[in-house]
Amino acid sequence: MSTRGAVDTKTYDVLIAGAGPVGLLLACELGLAGGLSVAVLERDPDYANYQSPWKQQPLGVRGINTLSAESFHRRGLLEQVIGPEEWAKRPMDVKSTGRTGHFAGMMFDAAKVNRSAPCWKYKLPGPSLCPSPSSLGRIQEALYQRAKELDVEIIGGVDVTALAQDEEHGTVEVHTKSGHSYRSKWVVGCDGARSNIRKAAGIDMVGTEPEIFGWTVLCNLDDPNKRLKFGFTRTSTGVYGMMLPGHIFLMEPTNGEVYDRTKELTKEEFEVIVRRVTGIDNVSVKDIQIASTFTDRAKQAVTYKSGRVLLAGDSAHFHSPLGGQGLNAGIGDAMNLGWKLAAVVKGSVPLSLLDTYQKERYPVGEWITEWTRAQVATMKPDLQSRAVANLMKDLIGTSDGATHMTDRFWGLSQRYDLNLGDDEQQHHDLVGRSVPDFEFTSGSDRLGERMYSGHGQMLYLGQDDRSELVNLAQRWSSSVEYVSEPVKDNLGFRALLIRPDGVVAWVTEDGSEPDVNSAEAALHRWFGPGAEVGTK
Image 1: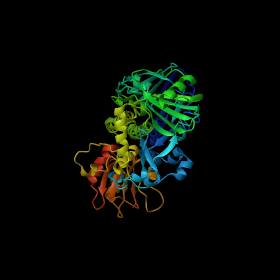
Image 2: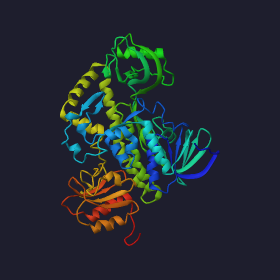
Image 3: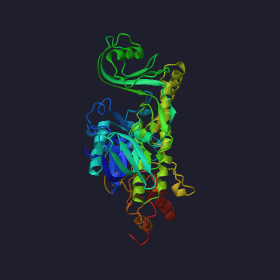
C-alpha cells in the first residue's frame, strides 16, 4: 500500500477506481500500451487478500465464457486465470463439456448442441473455445501480478467521494474521503454497482427495480429427513439451490417489501427464511459462517462516457447474479476500452474513437440485463412464471434450443456493429466478431499466442508474399504487427486486420485479391493516420 500526503501534484494519464477484475484488466491493457502513467484507486485496504472466502470456492466461483477465455488467451493469462488443474483437463471442443451452461437452473446438454450451426462457423477447437470455472481470487491475483509487471500503481484504502472536471486543462480531479486529491487526464469507474465515480459524474441509471430477493449462505444445516435437494429446486414460495454441502442460496418474491441488506443475518432469522422458501418445516440452522444478499435490480448507465469520465463493468450495468454474466461483460468492457483509451491518450487517434466504446458495448449491457430479467421471470412461484419456465425447459431440451442457449451463454455470436458503410471487405460477416484462433502450420502456436503484445495484427494466410500489404502495414508498425504465415484451417480467409481486442476489422476471402485501399481505410479508422510513405 502506498502512503501519501494531503496533496498529490502528479497528473496521471488514467486513474481507475476499483481493483476488481475489470479495473485490473483495464489497467493491464493501458500498461501494455507502454508510456502511460496509470494508477488504480481501491477502497479496500486489504484488496490483495485473494484468499478471502468471498473470492474462493464456493462464494467466489465464477464462470469464464468463450469471449473472456479468448481475451485472457490473447494476453497469456488463461492458464493462470483458470488454474493448473482446470487447465490440464480443459475441453477443446463442445462435445466433451457435458453441460454447456444453464438458464434459471435449466441445464443445456452438450450432446444436443448442433456443432454445425451458424454460431460455430468461425470457431476452431482450442484452449479458449470452451468456458471454464475460475474464482475471483484467482482472476484478481493473476491480473494484479500482471499489472505490477507493467508498472501500474495500485493504491489501497482510497475511498473516492467526489470529482471535478477541468475542461480548460483537460483533467479530472478526484477527491477522497481522507481529504487527499488525485489528478488525471482520464478517470474510469470500475468501482461496482454502487459506483462513487458514476454518482460523482452525475450519470443516471435506468432500468428495473427488484422483484425478488436472494441470500447466498455458507452454513451448517440440520435436515433430519434428508429432504433438501442438490441443484435448483422450485417450490411454492420461491427457489433454492444447493451446489455443495453447506452452501445454499434462496430466492423469493419481494412482494413490495424492502429488505435491509445492511443488517447482519442471524441464525434464527435465516432459519425462518430457509423453512419458508424450501417448504421444509423441520430444517434447522446450526450456524452461519458467511452470508450475502442480492436482488434482481437491473439497470444500465444512460451513458458510458461523460466528459473525461468513463464507466466499465458493474459501474456501467448491474443486474442479478443469475447466469454469472456480469464478470464476462466487464471483461469485454475492459478489453474494448483499454486499447482505445491508450491510443487517445497517446494522441495517435482522434478523441472520437472513444465513441465506439459505447456504441459497441452498450448493446451488450442491454442484452445481459434482459437475459437476467428473463431468468427471473421464470423463477417466481406464480402460475404464469411456472408456465414460462415449463416452456423454456421444453425448448432447452431440443437441439435447436440447446444450441441457441449455448450460443448466447458462451457469447459465440457476439458481433459489434462497426458502421462501415458500403465497403464489402469491411462489411463481411466476420467483421465485428472475435477472430478465430488460427493454428499456424509452422509449429504448435496459435494466433492468440501472437497477440500478447496488445498490438493489432495484419494477418496474411496465403502462400505468396504480398509486398503491398507488407508496405502498408509498415506505416502502422508502432501499433500493428504484420504476420504472413499459412494456418492449418483458414476457414476460407486470405487476409484479416485484427484490432488489439481480437475483433476483426477487415477481411479478404480465399480466392480474392486484398483491396489495399480498403485495408488502408480500416487501418486509418482504428489506428490513426499512420506514418507517411518513406518515413519511420
